[in-house]
View 1 (cartoon, rainbow, N blue to C red):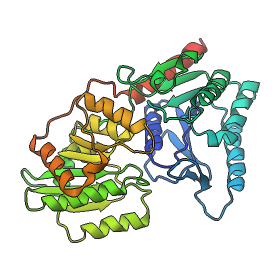
View 2: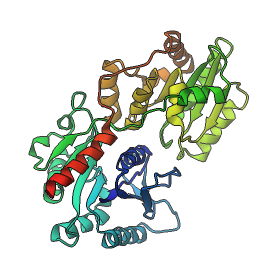
View 3: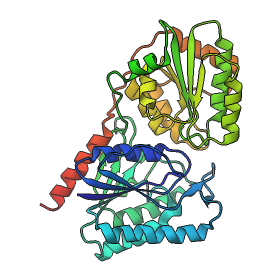
View 4: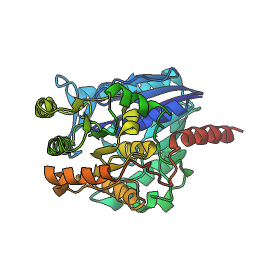
Amino acid sequence: MKIVHYCQHVLGIGHYFRSLEIARALYRHELVLVTGGPPVEVRLPPHVTEYRLPGLQMDGSFTVVSPTDKNRSLDEVKEERKKLLYSLFERTAPDIFLIELYPFGRRSFAFEVEPVLEAVRRGDFPSAKIICSLRDILVEKKNHQTYEQRVLNILNKYFDGLLVHADETLVSLSETFESADKIRIPLAYTGFVTPRPSADGGRKVRTRLGLQGKEALVVASAGGGRVGHELLRAVVEAHACLAGKRPLRLCVFTGPFMSEANFSDLSDRVASLPGIEVARFTEDFLAYLSAADLSISMAGYNTCMNILAAGVPSLVLPFAQNREQRIRAEKLAALGGLNLLKEEDLEPSRLAALMTKVLSSGKKPVKVPINLDGARETARWIEHWRKSAFS
């Protein structure tokens, strides 16, 4: 099959990496990954080609869209993106158009998506079937009834299937989308999407870091990095409180999009502290989690699933801007998969005490009975569904 996979990350990198993991699972097919957020430099599988649209991003409140290139106007970028996306369909004539999040989110990108949807409905691209790829939990909307009706109108009119990347035993779509029973297209839960750590990845990281004996490793991370600076600063200060009390190493990953000012602040703080490394990003993040005795992070979808896949004890701070991270984190905490942080826990001595408590309990693999095979199940569903649709 020829697949066009559309994913627009606008603040963090979670959407991008979840889509990339699904793309990896579709290795039997020719796949074009359409992106258009701030560039993320990662190695792509041989069967995947990235098709970058001129970049757009959003502010932390998700209200303002702006070009990543400050020298271009928003109208100019939008017009170019619309033409480029449409021309991709004219050239490739895909069998599957897999759209991440839209129409449940990314309303600001309707200008480029809906012309393609209309063209498919008219029969201009007769082989194309349209599938929505959706995260487990939706953020809250002010006028939720109007929002849900708009989503239903688009979904039931243009789409052929909906894949929810969650385990229904933990969370169902109806919990954050009340009109789920009015969806008239096939809906399937795939399980959560996450890569799995290699068998010896953790050992290799510990060897590379030169960790000795019972020296503990703490990995602190902030996803894409546009938010999370306060958490990472608190971890650095808590580490300083623990210096000399126990053998402890700290690796901090700020995320590729953390501002230069915040990255410099963290780098300056650790300059005189032993046993701390600060980097923006690593493609071996899952191996670091496998090597770690404790993970401290925000509570985004990808990070939470990485934590569960690695089986590492954790402290997570849900993003306060919306309900999504808190709902997920509380559900996983109730199963014993995560330990929740509150804003007041970021006081350095208090955080140091919480870190000590987890580390002193001894590293034990964290096992939560939920489906983490979402990427492979997504590929299986698409392949089976496409075959059945044309048999």
